[in-house]
Amino acid sequence: MKISKEKVQKLTLEIRRLIDLGLSDTQITESYKGKIDRSTFYRYKKRIQKEIVKNYERESKDATQYEYAMLKKALEDCYRINYQIANDVKKPPQARITASEMFVVARAQLVKLAEKGPTFKPQLTR
Image 1 (cartoon, helix red, strand yellow):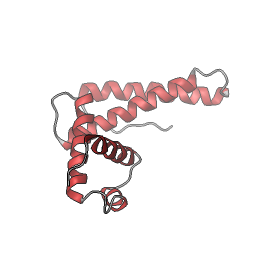
Image 2 (cartoon, helix red, strand yellow):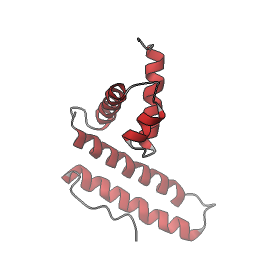
Image 3 (cartoon, one colour):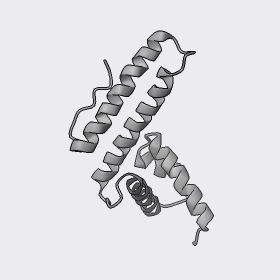
């Protein structure tokens, strides 16, 4: 059965969202039982991984590079969110101080990640 490009794109986006939420492959395939088979799911997942890696590491195709890209994305999100909190004058001072510490740590971890790769243990808590 041939699926339209629009439907493929929609399913790919839905699967990406579920992966980003932390659902396991089994949970995702069970939720799409009857809509797509396992092999199709893994083909879509591989396409999603390649897209993420392409955005962060141009020539990588390896699952390790995918995890590296996801770590980088998580650190960037942590930096961005905490930076916004630290600069929001409506937030309580303690929240702003904690957020300041967190975005500095996240930024330092991004630098370490760029220099040494994913070989460190992030310390994002006090």
